[in-house]
Amino acid sequence: MKKLLFLLFMFSFSLVLGQIPKIEAVKINTFAVTADTFLGFDSFGFYYWIKNNVLIKTNSDATFEYKNVSLGKITAVDLQNPLKVVVFYENFNTIVIIDNQFNESQKINFSENSVPIVVSAMGIAAQNQFWIYNSLNQQIGLFDYLKKDYKTISTSFPESIKLYQSDFNTFYWIDKNNNWYACDLFGTITFKQKISNFDSIQFLNQTQLIYTKEGHLYFEDIQKKQKTTIEIPEKSFKKCYYKDQILAIFTSEGITNYKIILP
Image: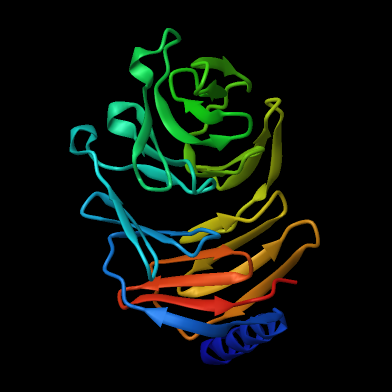
């Protein structure tokens, strides 16, 4: 009886999986990469990764490197503006801006700011500003890096940030209970939805995301209430990154690029 029930369960589970629509991924190319962390690529064809705490930017014609031993380990890198790459060193409460040649153009130590700030999450925002999550008051703020002016824009939220991402107009995060929120430039916080368990995730906009779970890759549109499987041959990969209909899959062998069209 138990065996029969198990078989019925597996059959039903297979039917559910079979009902999830699929996106075809068309392979473009593959190249070898030895990296600790793959970050992504920009619109100019450069790929970014971290190796031995050195930030590397490369394409077929040029390679640039940035390292700052005095600031310890790189915590995060924001690639939204390839002309102003932002490197975050959490242990030293510092953000460094580097140009497209990887020359250091500005360094901001928030421990020296007149308003107490301890940064635990950051990203580049519109109008010469950074998104800042200040762990001292558990609030989101905006820091004008030209005027060196900081303002708190959100109410505090007690649940710790599990994962975050931002674009110029929105700061996204998932808390430890897997709740997805978004905050705009005016400080308005919007609850998006509760996210199922995942291994990694990338927000594409306010309603769409790509995430990985147990070696599978999914695209989800919460507005359309639509979930889609992205079919790739790799069953074990470290990270995926999507931009401009190109999906990059990072494995221990290197990076494979696929062309995909999202619904």
